[in-house]
Length: 102
Image (cartoon, rainbow, N blue to C red; front, side, top):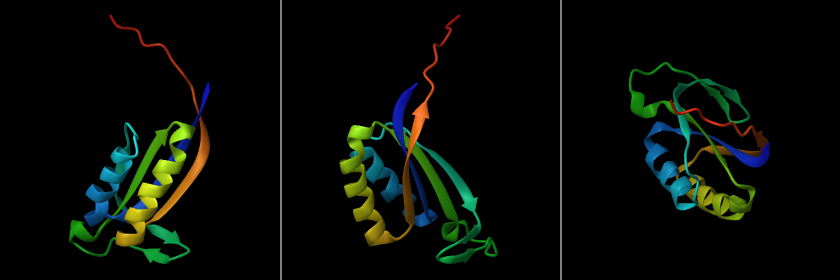
């Protein structure tokens, strides 16, 4: 196993491209996006009452090497300060596996 950082971002769908650009600019190699996210947090309730997908929320999750944390934090903070959203970064462990090609 190896230590990695996990970043989780909740934001408006309209800002998805800008957020993914900030992750890529920081050297985060990959990510997953879950669209149409609803829930309740410290900033209030988010529901899916609207027919317009541009107003939907998304959940972005990615993993990166711990040494990239300062750059990831800087770039993501700048993007979220400008466009909105919330972000959480935590420690995680990656289980390294071998792939069989056959």
